[in-house]
Image 1: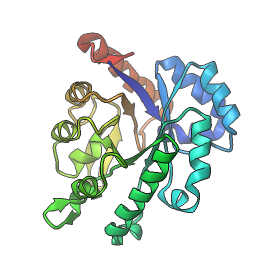
Image 2: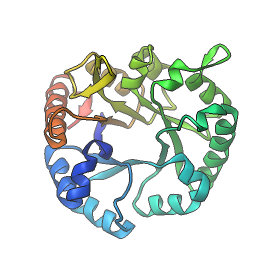
Image 3: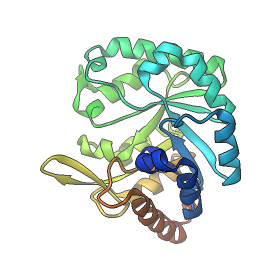
Image 4: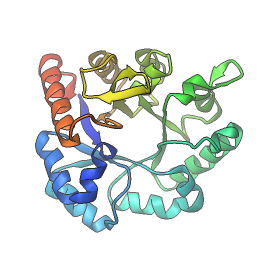
Length: 255
């Protein structure tokens, strides 16, 4: 069964106020792992102790592209110290996206360094990889054609695939075998774009995504809300309640 984790960006404000207490709360809700988006000044020893205390696994770590270009080795070393195998590029700025060939070349180099250190490089998409094209291909598909699977794996954000105009189920199937992590996220369309909501409250077929993720052999489904309309700890509890209900019916996820 697929394990269920939380992208900690969802509770970033709570982590700033009470890092240890927030980790304890999400563990108590039933999340099995955490995907980091920064370490809030904690040492690797402190992170290890906290994860062990609450029986949490490390799903992966969102690690900024610019920081990886500046000093990938020290970032890899830190992540290995906390037992993390997946280094994930989470986002690319408008400036960087002016030159996709350079990005692909840099991802190759970073992937090679990760391989040398027995960790895995992944890329996390937003919608622009689907709305921007390189020739006949979306940037997303062009990236994974240009950079081989041995150097770059997929973290598919199913919400942004759908918002970008494509079918997330088809993309899960397409990249099966190269897809260790799927972001499990829902949204509603607004006049300003997309408002992320709790699982089951929006337009994303979240149950079907979980089914497809399990069939694709992925390791993790990672719950995330970029922004919440209620306190984030309430949002992640509501989403976990949906997950438990889905898991009890389907047997597809481990909760």
